[in-house]
Figure (tube, one colour):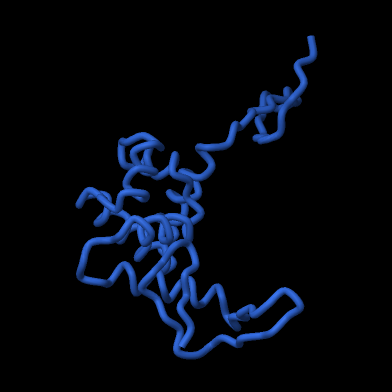
Amino acid sequence: MYHFTDGGLRNVWLQNGYELKNTAYGETVSIQDIDGLVTAVCVAITRKKSKLTGAEFRYIRSAMLLSQASMGKALGRTEQAVAIWEKSGRIPKYADILLRVLYAQHSNGDEKVKDIIHAMNDAERTIHLVMKETSKGWSSTESSEDLLCVA
């Protein structure tokens, strides 16, 4: 069995689905379906009966591509608060529950939840609205690139 320690996890072992290889740099592991494994690990973590550890909280959050800042905003807390939870392992009960529910709905393909998560991720980017006057009036497009101010 292979001890899967991705993302700081300590309690996950792989029975199969991997291959150990010797390279010039030492032994490496090749996982055949890493995306499927990450999803399965997250689902298993969200269904476990005990509280989430800091590493588990971080693993699920990262699997949804949420930053600590985005997670903090969603929970009404700061980025630093989320970092402390993940490092100390003292996750507030409401944050534990909310993250499990968000991931469960996200992994089940709930488009509304996916849209919310994408919006949370997008909140970290600076979005510029580019306004253009046309014969039908003003229209807008979004750009996340830095724009030069032209006078």
